[in-house]
Amino acid sequence: MDELQRLRNEIDEIDEQLVPLLLRRMDAAKGVAQYKIEHKMPVLNQKREQEILDRVGEECGEQGDAIKTVFSAAMDASRALQHKLIGGGEQLRSAIENAQRGSLTANGEPVAVQGVEGAYSSITAKKLFPDSPIDYHRQFEDVFEAVNKNKARFGVIPVENSTAGSVHESYDLIMKYRFYVVGAYDLSISHCIAAKEGSKFEDIEEVYSHPQALSQCGIFLKSFGFTGVNATNTAAAAKLVSESDNKKIACICSVDAAKKYGLKILRRNIQNVTNNTTRFIVISKSLVISDSADKISLIFSAPHKTGSLYRVLGRFSMTGLNLTKLESRPVANGRFDYIFYADVLGSVYDEATLDLLCALHDELPEFTFLGNYLEIKGAQ
Image (cartoon, rainbow, N blue to C red; front, top):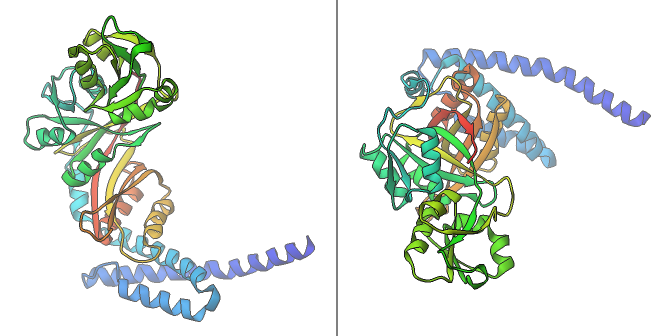
């Protein structure tokens, strides 16, 4: 232990020498920022950064990769300081400044959802917008198109489930349309299996529902040997079963949907876990930010360089922000390129958070601010 303490003391002495040097570096970065302001130069100089990293890697031999990571962090901190002083991201700052403030309301205009009455999307939309008519659509993309063509003020779509994971189709459409995300609602999901009156549980062979619902009830289906059959959504499955003369089929849906379509509930609470929850988001062509907004959604790409994603994520940590989701989706260009969707806890009305977003907006090859909104923890 004496030897360990001696080594720790040596590290402490080295750190004491490093701190003043790092502070000098940050002071020099302030001077660089002022020069760039006067000469209208961008903050990021990728060529210079790479030259520094290459030199460090060569000088440090077998420790080159580790020391390059330390230098990368120092350069990221220096660049963040320069962005703060220069105040870039004018386009993003303007969009946020001009955003509609206050609570989320459709003012009686239609709200678009996928499915038919009784679907979980419908239940969520009614909770969020009780005074607005619900506009039902067959496909998820139809919801986006309804918002795009101003046929609906908002759209409500599911993005992930606590059991079955992400709804990839939703994320692909978010990437495609780049609408604002202006709200979110976590709905507790309790599935039942239902069939036509006169059907017997032991006679059921096929069970219809949305693939997510089938996955969420996978243990139940497997234990009874049922065959799952895909439907466009849970309520549509209930409607299909109600209109069929086949008493050997059933559906997985909400209790509301089963009652809506006159079905007999055979079993309740059949989901794999009791606290099964689906997160829905509200999409809009206009940016709305509530005063109590607590989550930020972003789309971005990272340069094709070793450690680039790591460095981007490090910027969030440096600002004290917590990422709650990172979803990668392929870019349809045949080159295995990916783009990222991220959820971050925070508010754009926090100066440090806004500075970071503006810095990433200016630096990254692609960056889209989707919104800053309140996520409501609801119940079915």
